[in-house]
Image (cartoon, rainbow, N blue to C red):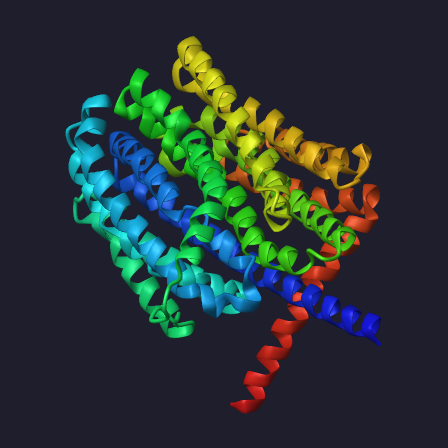
Length: 504
């Protein structure tokens, strides 16, 4: 009976995780569409220099927010069953760190302006700093919602937030706010998120706080804090290097290309982590099932992200030329290079969450410590060799090599054979390269290559049409897994739609 009960709980957990992945995948697709339209509008309204200045401001904002998060959410997720007892100390720790982060950003602003020779950074960083303590108000409610696996609410809110952020940025750009168009909506949306998340999952912050709880949170979070800080510094490393050696316009071209290239990886991988970390934490007593769940998630993510990024790479040239003429063509090589390198980072997000669920925080810190000198060494060498193009090639090479190596080492520790790990990278790469390569070749045929729109249509039709066919022929099991997941999701939507129709 105990085994049956455990199996039933595991099945319920699996269904909740699968449902969460599907809801957040729909949100990611919607966000990708919204982000794409927004990127086009902003590319018309703003200059490369505007993109460059905000990209430099984000180097301070991103690192400050990594310092503020401190890993409290990961520690709190490990205490799901007694989270109510830990909400008050977690909340006050987060808020205190948020206030310190805001002060730190305000102090750092003039130094960053001097470092990058950009006086306008002072005001931009100040506008972003206001959001830092406000964002921490939603940390504890967010963990509660994730622990309850209410991913439908998270997907709905994330879609709203992305749409509001993009519309607000476009409106401000149209009104002539320049780089401030990116900064002003962030604190406004932080207030809205805090209000909605407190309404959905109000934390109990009035409980007495014991000294031992603060010591545990700060002590347990310190390793996660160090890891996140290093990772965020690495994430901003290419902008830091370019800010020192290139003009604002060149940094803006790179920033535009990176945003365009990284969206599918960051959104899909980030949403997977929101679902999988609480699920992995609940499977901690069953390491074998935990590892198998991680492998399935890695496979699902790889076979979705890699073809999408390859499609971006082959569409970049004719697509951007069709939309903007020569205005953004200098960004095309950056988009192509980054789109081919970034998807290899996706799987490492899931294996990193597996480490967190197993509380192997020190190993994650070790991988992060190694990554920093490696990344900066490559980025500096690339920048000195060929400015922004060299940095893009260095970044792509880093993501093509180091994150897969980390994932391999993590999964090998869990007993996964090397062949199963390598398949996560090799097969999606081969199938995507063949499908999208043939799509690109079709766009060079006589009668097609003379027009950008016809090339875009040919690449999209042939590439996306061939990919599922090749997947069916070469990896039928993965095809069936994806078809089953999306088929189940469509069935749910049909039932919901039918219920609404009957009610009407």
